[in-house]
Image (cartoon, rainbow, N blue to C red; front, side, top):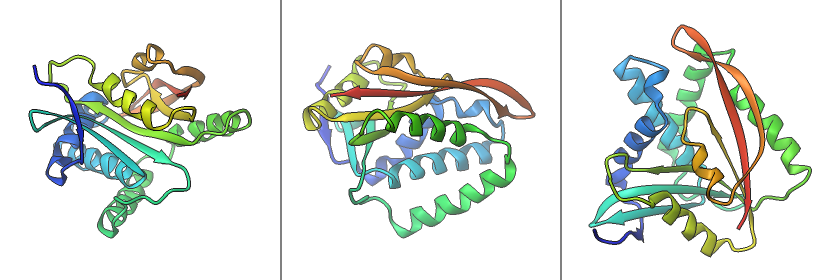
Length: 202
């Protein structure tokens, strides 16, 4: 098996990043409509991409194996193009109109406010996903190791929840700083979802 390498993310691989998010974060739990699922997955990827200041793309045999997006606070966001920002703004309005009772962002803001009373993070990991069809182990760890090299001594946080593989961070040096359980809309039902704020000093 060939080794993983960090390379610039190809725009032609954005589609793969959208698929990584769709499968890895189980977006199909929230809608069975294929058009809605595609639009939401694309919105999620672009929203995280335009918030990123640094992109770590792991390639193996020229095939994209995983991606990590990092938002270093106060730095320029090179991927925040006009088209992506407009698409995200339109989708945000549609999402808010569809689900006005969604408390996800609110509870994360509460956790962040408390966290920042005690720590001063340099950056936030916005997105970390590996190709679910790639059998190579350690893709996520490889990406985190690149962050560790570049941000030695820095405080970094991230959000995740029980619909994702949150246990991954428990074994990668992160502290589960705070958590909160909300009732989240899934189709026509409301189900419990636990949100986490993780932190780590690299």
